[in-house]
Image (tube, rainbow, N blue to C red; front, side):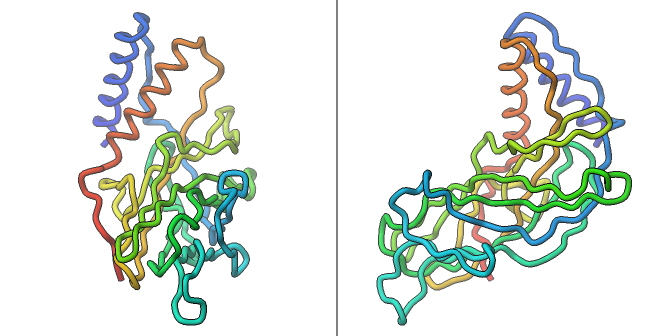
Amino acid sequence: MAFARIHKKRFFAFIATLIIGVPIFITSNASAAMFTGRVSTNTISINDDLNPDATYKEEYNNRLIRLGQNPSPGYTIEDTLQTLAGYNPIETDASEAFSVGGITHWNGKTVADTAPDSIAYNVNLNFSGDNASLGPQTFTFNLDFNAGAEGESDVYSIPDTAISDQTFTYNGVTYALQLLGFGNNPNAINADFITGGLYSNSNSNILAQFVEIPATVPTPAAGTLALASLAALALKRNRNTRTKRTT
């Protein structure tokens, strides 16, 4: 695994050289920092600025959201997203994929074009052990939501640039959290979470990794590093294995 990581980094360094004509040397991640702790139950909310015309209802201390307008109140349930309760332990190094929690979705009846397009997903992480001094941290992301036509699947997606604005510093290095995608296997990460059909429950884990935030670099090099980051994410995601996960 370490051998594969080193060769991926050499590949991105080679791409950087082709783009800006200046070699960028990236060292092995063999001595990467280890992070331990647990992920508490995550929360979800709606940003009204991003969803000015949406209909929704937040419940259960921001753990459940009714998405869109119910066409038949009292007779059916609209699309519903809920975070799964749990305290997931983590022990990972930087750039290693791990689960930050799960979500479950009920595909109900919702009036067309009334559901939010964007949902704020808050990862609540408590560091422990050697990282205990970092304390509790919350990282906020946006999940894109596309409500399918009646009877069709709904789809959740993670933007390619899903790196948290929130950062922390450990041993002199600044880190952020990056969402990678959906799935139960870090080696087969899906860019989308495609739900089951009408009147079905579906669930999935959300996978993430810690990423180093480099010190300020010249603009051309910064663009190259961003390109390399997106290329690495593309390698991790398996867009050809988007499968429905139903229960």
